[in-house]
Length: 252
Ligand SMILES: CN1CCN(c2ccccc2CNc2ccc(C(N)=O)cn2)CC1
Image (tube, rainbow, N blue to C red; front, side, top):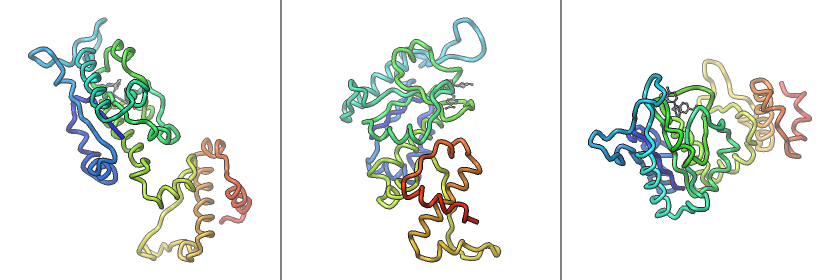
């Protein structure tokens, strides 16, 4: 999957390109990341990418022209990477507090895209005319304000890249199916057996895979009911899960 990021701080993206599952996916070319700095697309000697806001007020606004040139360059790279740019296969995505709040179900649909061009705002934001002309999708990672769109862009890329078929292990993707979107995760345990006298739930040591799957699902249910009743109300169980739910009363 193709990712282009337009940011005045491209160096920040080593945080995802140099580590872990996403770093490996980029190294293995299972996903590609093109970092584009709008400063390289300015046409004045001072490489200006920001200016004072019309109408006054504090701070600066990012100018339309350098960002436009950066976006058009990103589209060229996307085309060269085989993305169906004209067909909407590589949308320009703007990370902003005004965007649609990102959820796992939105993320689940994104690997179907050929790629994404991520636009990272700084200062007080970006000239509205650039946004109206080029932005196809506006996304927020939550109801809070950050100093820039770079961290939200990294959050979005991490959430999508981990779900790419080539990246997710077969076991994990099987688990992904059973880990129903919309429930919180179950507790996890590993060595040592005894941690300050706290032991591991017996069922997990039984080797009885059906009982273990049932116990994990019921733990997910219990946690979701307790911590996120909103998610629990929206949850639709499979037939097997509906059977397990009948035994919930017997859960400790
Ligand atoms: C002081 N101003 C800095 C710039 N900012 C702004 C304004 C418009 C676009 C991007 C930004 C970058 N900030 C973001 C970005 C995303 C999120 C999110 N929730 O996804 C939170 N913040 C408005 C506030």
